[in-house]
Length: 163
Image: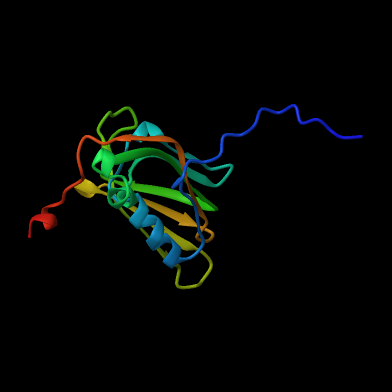
């Protein structure tokens, strides 16, 4: 006797759909590169202390698409979910109020183990001097693209690009 699967078929992820896990400082360096110039709002971030999880949704710039998708000039963004597990405490510096509609541009993510080896500090650095600091049991981060990419208004530029 054979079983019939009554569930709707899952749509396969699009080619290039990223799904990453970071467990080391080196992994966080890769995650940081992938997230460079992602944009978000305060409303798209949350800390769930009972679950020990910090999560955010961003519009990630697809740096990797610049070389392969000449049809759209390679300027694409995609909605991306990111979460950090094992988070014990979240502190912020120069962040706008939760109700703010100010767009935050993520510049880098950094991680360093505590000197005693009993945890890690993960820092999210945004343009304009805004910072989120996570105190975590260890480096345990996940990134997953959600949905389809769309044309970006422009390619992110930095003052250093003009040197």
